[in-house]
Amino acid sequence: MKKKIGISYTETNFQNYWNWFTSQELGDEIELIELSFQKDNIYDFQLCDGFVLTGGIDVVPELYGGAQDYPHKPDKFLPERDQFELQIYTYSQDHQVPVLGICRGMQYVNILEGGKVFEDNGEEKNQIHKKGIEDKVHGVKIERNSLLYSVTGVEKGEVNSAHHQGVNPGYLGDNLMVSAYSDTPDGIIEALEFKDKTDKAFMLGVQWHPERMKEKESNPLSQKVKEQFIEAVKNHKR
Image (tube, rainbow, N blue to C red; front, side, top):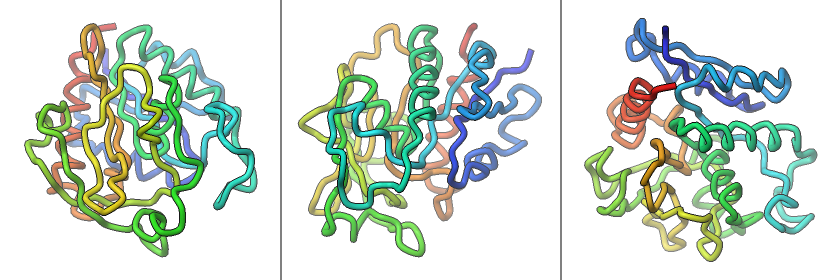
């Protein structure tokens, strides 16, 4: 029986996530499943050996006690997506299924673990991190005592950036630790993982977009992260 990776549907650039996993990497062992709040295909969760929580629209601020109005607020939220991805994450933790959270996905893991995000990082930080015509690019510093370091083998690197929200360091979720910060003056949180990994499946959250990073095949902050996630999927036992 093939292993399966469930990728949460996003209204923005979903195909990039799908295409990131090449046929050579998936081989005959793994296939992809679209998990969509529009289809509400919650019964497909039990088929999955790994989940990718994708980027996209801001999470409803009521879920973390955030302000109702703020700069760059979307015209419309998608509470049905928030609810669907809450179910994905709950299932992943109940059944020890590997999770990779990307951009919004990482922020939402923090929220679901009881943390908060900044509704908007502010104009100064947005000049560094918020997407313009293209993604911004900046460096990151990786904590040596982290899973991210053991996966990538690097203490620093370069990533793309396309976000106006960020994890609030004063409100980290339960049992989460920061594994990377931006090397910019604001020092924004760039990666999260479990602090105590006992009885936990693989979980990494990254603020950047490894699925559309330039030179992603040679950048360990894309390729090595993906390879380790795929390995965790292969080793998952249902």
